[in-house]
Image 1 (tube, one colour):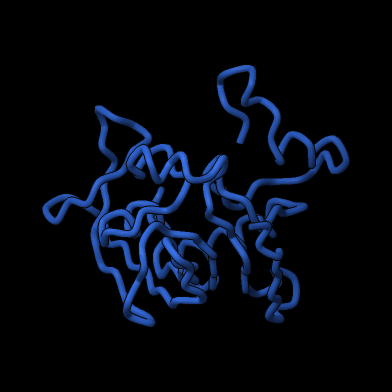
Image 2 (tube, rainbow, N blue to C red):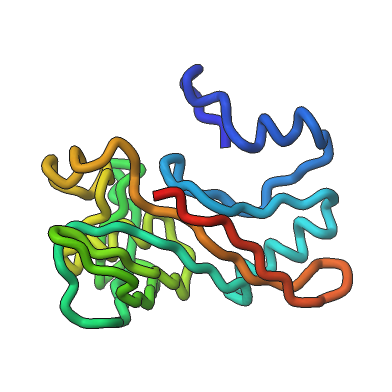
Length: 184
């Protein structure tokens, strides 16, 4: 979405509407996250797709490069999240007031100092993957909100990519799986 600052006005939604004036946003990615997004071409499709996100029918897969060597091959993170209002847009784990947030993960590759993970969010909270990785001790490289300075400086970009989305087409209900190759 276009930001308030002039240097944040240029975004995918703005560029897409130059070619398709009827394009409607269905979901968002964090500003620094790369990957696949869905836009609708009419209000009915936007509503149908939005309900799939709301009811958690849409299956999402991300890739992330995290700092550290993850020793298990897979796992599940169940940590409730809430906005850290004094430090917006940061989110925090809060077992009292936080909303349910769940992420499954699988190791894809281990390197000398880092691990490549497949992240499978089961819920869709703001910054969920970023907070979950940081909370279990493996911050995402290049994360300006949650990574310590050395991990932030290890990359010029956030190493988080929305790789696949699987959903039902709003017109005929057939399953579609869209993917965008990871650029890092």
